[in-house]
Image (cartoon, rainbow over all chains, first blue to last red; front, side, top):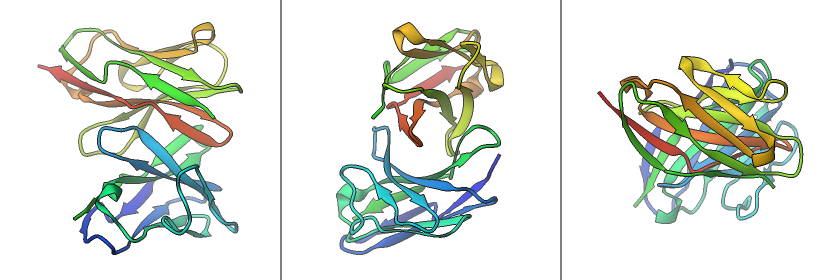
Length: 114
Length: 111
């Protein structure tokens, strides 16, 4: 199956700053996804990122807060902008892996905003 | 949009006990159903999936799940758990190129 490398694995950030999370896939994938997992909660889809087009955001998430780049078929970034403590979460990237007919996930970025 | 319900968020059991985790979903279209497992400190891994065909699906590490369409359920089972099955288990429903997750079951197996 595809392997997704995500970094950083964790970070502690000051409120008001921004953090960019990188996601690298070892094979070309059409669709990549960004999820948030808040403490004690399920994974919530933030947006879908397709190469060559703007990301599609889910209800409750906006581009100004979570800008996403998808410059090619193996890479994507998610920026968490103007952070507040409420943004403290685990952020995961994912991709559809047709070889296993499922979704593959990165190892996640544990973000703490102080 | 699809939604997923998982009950009994925390499950504690002894080795060799049987495990069953419930998953109910709602979605109006054709669903693809998944169970993912996240071992401590590791990333999400696909345990098993159902797309069509035999509703009893066998996955890795002795896990199986049964799709019951009339009940909108996709329950996960393992007849005899091991300490190494300690993990968080997520049921997910795929449709329209998006995946919706349940809240997960934190399973702790006591040696």
